[in-house]
Length: 339
Ligand SMILES: Cc1ncc(COP(=O)(O)O)c(C=O)c1O
Image (cartoon, rainbow, N blue to C red; front, side, top):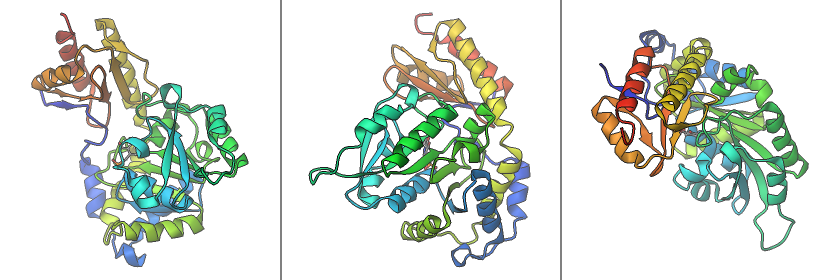
């Protein structure tokens, strides 16, 4: 049995068809704006997101960091969920690159409530860092791969706009939300000035993310990308993977979601504490020793991440098929604590 790697949806390898598309890509120097494949990917991404322009960036982290930088000034405050990626897993980039502080907001399953945003925006005062940006994560990774209902996305952006804040969506897994909700990316991001989404997660690319937004902001973002060392040359080889993924790997995300549901149901039958997943991420809670379970499973060829002392995350993706799912369920049944 080949090992099953559920640590993240980032571990996928390009399919032979995707690789072929990459090899065949016409390329040029993208820093000169001359890579036709990057230009096409940026046009397609902007269109999908319903925005004027898009920027191809090496990672979701860089997409978020450029967004923070172009929406704010040093000394500003950014509102985001307490479990959000820029606050927890971007190496304090917000403080270093944009010079902002992130105010962590609570909320069930990774979702912030609009009244929480309202209350967090404080009156003008020389003591206080002005909140100038709301960043919303969809799907909410640590919230459980949660899909925001559209009315909530709209309500959050409306509160932010009414109070003069810009809005960014960290849509690293935005297409998981798109297929789970049946709504288009443009619909789901209509209240957001910018959205970043990853090609390198469920969509199965080797590298790359997109930052989409208004033309003038993306223009500034292009300079920030250069500043951060993210200006790539014949990046069309990578962009071709992105174009392939947007055409062939979006609808199939429903397969990952269906397997995630089967995994959650199977684990619950065994006795594990598991919530019903909205998308491709399955979280197990109440484990006596999550790192020990993860180590034991790895010995049986099933890899997943302990995300805390008592919890673990299993990510379904392109490289996990039905056989991998069965092997995971068998292994975790055998290793059920106390059995
Ligand atoms: C919600 C979210 N945003 C941003 C990122 C960053 O993406 P990358 O790993 O490409 O920097 C991740 C990565 O897992 C993520 O889960």
